[in-house]
Length: 279
Image (cartoon, rainbow, N blue to C red):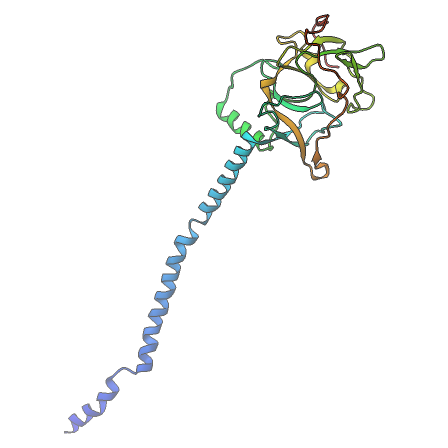
């Protein structure tokens, strides 16, 4: 009897306390929730760097597309276009300027591929390196290819361009051109020339004539220093960098009075004095 009584008294105490049971279950439940949260965070956090790379790649691809079809950044590497453009300027070249039937005009500042006119065509030694360099140049992060040039259009197809007259000035189709865009103190040219621009060709010169290697330097080369119109990349319309020079590339009225070339051509042909030198 005593034994049964003792067992009877112990019976209630042998059940687990409800409060303690809830505490016991809460601990593992909290641990499971934390583990589940950590596990669920991994898939979301792990690919974050992938998303960053994808966004970055998409931005670069977009910029390359814009650069290829619409507007290309171009780094100015030399003093040949001072004071209009300065070393280190990053300009935006409008590739749509001549895309729909329009052609370069006298006074336009253009970027062109000089292969075959200013430089000889040479095979690329390192295709991968060339591709990377072209991509960086397309984004304005590196100097342009050695075949790319920026100059001002002075004569278009049919024009007769002569330098210099008795007063040391440039003439186009017999009309004096007052070139206010030149570096103060620079001559229009130290190299005399008298040329007629063939159809679909351009005669181009730098604004800093004493520092510019341009059409004058290739008078005796195949093509006579003339740039094919279809080699023009686009028109330099804006200076995008540095911010202190953020502006449009100034136009000029220097050629407004120049008449169109005569329908039958000029009465005298070009008198090319031979291979020019930098002047």
